[in-house]
Length: 262
Length: 329
Image 1 (tube, rainbow over the protein chains, first blue to last red):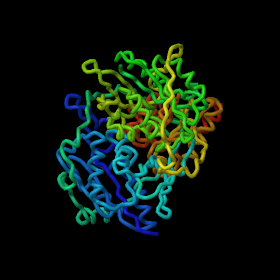
Image 2: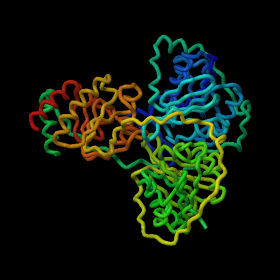
Image 3: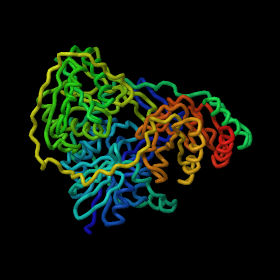
Image 4: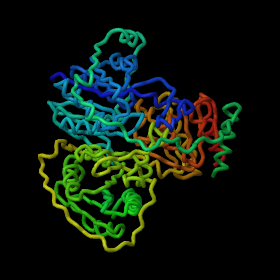
């Protein structure tokens, strides 16, 4: 089997699992303020896991590509610790709140600079704006066959075979390499990374940083999201009645709650 | 004149409920912009669905019939849509945030050089410039954002079960067949097989008992199934749900997933076991009539949206609860 060259696009975002109390909306500046550590967007982690599994089977190279205004390489180094070979950071002040089309434009330029590849993997959507567009637009821009919502990816003789989720179950879809695939969480969570390995990667690792000039993206090729307003959603909190006591007593009272609701 | 075009979806040889919702939303936009509402129906055969659709609008029922549109191949559907949009040049295009819309929307937007807002829960026309505004929850549901949708064709995909469905009773819609040029070579993805799976219809449940990472393993779901069985005796339809984390860990299949990228539900009773309540989960269940949460961490999100909370290891409480319910029933 020939070795695989896989590109994984990974976005750095504030942890979407953050407690509600750590999130607020700045309506004036139209920003969601999340007082939580930065992480790799969860579906992108799923994509990385899929890439690592493919590499384990066929051998090859995983390049992780990340774009943003200000990237923290300590967050993205996790990808190297998990099993990626190279990290390419696309950092520029202009890369803040780009619309999906512009984000795909930047990523497509970087991928063209990378040159040869077999697969481009992205998460199905990012955990901050939840648009779910960049991956598929990127596929269009690169002129690649696109398969979305992958739950399992296999390579067979120059083709990729994907189990993709469809309304009635799943479809086995086949495309010639190179191809673009958006990955869903059924693929499984990113593997556990030991602390030693994580610490080792905090120092070493192959990290490149490309400027907009280097990838050839001009300012007028990109635009920011056009937001008319940003607001706090309707309050969804309720008054929680905590049921106390021993598990036995709690069960007794909860059973009574069910009976009353019947 | 502004033409608001809805991409219709067909289920069991009739318009699916989400299409009726899109027509409801589209009608308001057409009225607000002084335009007309039209629908595009595609397939190998559209049949009498076109006539049925006509009763919901005053504009045009466009239909594309082509043997290669049998089933759903995104490449072929996209090519047909692109050709149709070039002929119709709709001002606004509404698609469902369904599997089909999620796949076609971004790619079509790229080809039309339009901007798309996905998963909208409200649509309106900006009174200042007549442009479409799409309202969408972002950050998992932590904020609501109103996006402008630029482009000659302004595009949105809309969430299901949010917009009131259109009512029939219109007459006078025009019927236009659109010819498209398609050939097999356009398709770059081959469908080897479609495997039907038994999936759980969470939106039909009276009670959903959902488990998350706190279950600690897939055996936890067996215990929840025991609770479901005990409740089924009195409550009818009781189903098992889960958080995204439980799917990621491979403990349960994704058709059980509740939340933003799973199913959005509002059962009579939702029981969250070992679920901390990430916002993308909460948006999928917060409209449940009663919410009961069992979790060891008293500070976690789930208790903020719950009516009843138990701070305890579920392995202690759930078996005792099953026992009590058995006695009561």
